[in-house]
Length: 240
Image (cartoon, rainbow, N blue to C red; front, side):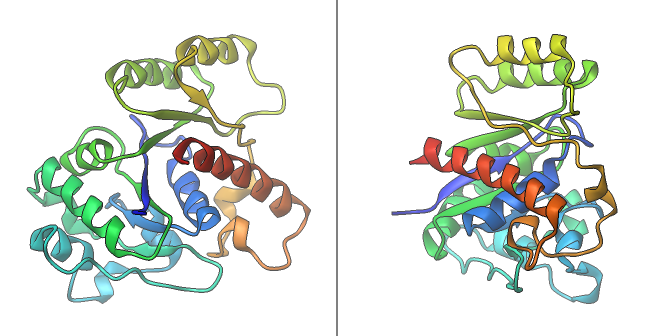
């Protein structure tokens, strides 16, 4: 059975998208394809520095097309398998249809039950292609005024896709009006995952191990990892 493609996308940055994609890939035993070329993305979080290498494996593979050799995911202990991004992706002129075809072909070639695709915030051809081919589109949700407006537009624009909304950075006492707005936007058609709490320390964390794979975790790592695993279970249930 070919791997299920789980695309993590957001209309704006700063909503926990990359951390969610990283932890989901680790929890699912998935290959993480990083289409976010910014320096703060999953590639550098993983510890891969594109400027140290002559080639850009992901860009090369996209240019070869779906019939060519797929990129080889990189491996490290306690981290998800990674197909790293490259800054040159920002200037690429690859059609969304080609991106979708490549991801579909690679998902069949890799030994993985899931492929998680992290995307660049906003609209671009790479993100459009990853959305087109997704078996499930995961959208992180921050319970704030501007973020909820962006979410409303995204839910309307992506109504034809299978969606999973993931509340992220949720404070101990979430604002009731935004919780109700989320429930209204989801309605009966859109799934909402268990929430991810506001773990502010994650932004200061230097370890590259995924929280869900970290050996000898402390109390706060265990708590955060349990939340990400709950979201991963929601993904598995929907994709089953």
